[in-house]
Length: 166
Image (cartoon, rainbow, N blue to C red; front, side, top):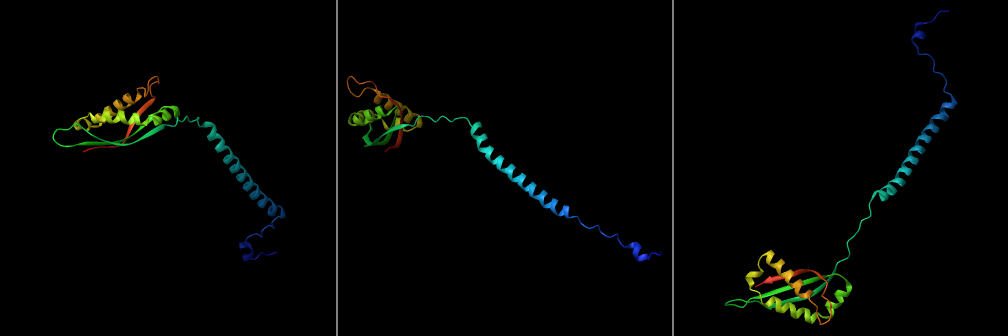
């Protein structure tokens, strides 16, 4: 038998594909997809739980309680011309009972403030340190009992909302 030169150069005939290979490839792709989806689901379920366990409980400070005092305008000591101080403030009190007590005695509180503020020379209210010193003096003055037989007020601090000297 003679072989022709063209037959020698021709590639061998491809083997027929098996029907098993047609089934195995789609099943393998499907299995990989299911495994990846299951892994993603498990990881997403563990992440919030792990974050919640690792976070330490945050302790928030007590909610501050403020009593706002309407702005006051007083004449201040001045040589030669009329000058005044316009100030608005808020008192930080320790509890609701102290807040109710300050509100009940507001006329007494405002009177004490007017007397304390009107005895100031305007030059003593210029710097930040001067204003901080004044806030502490106000806190001490308003911490005194507002009526005979009452305990001292529980005022934690004084915050200025407006402060103008003219």
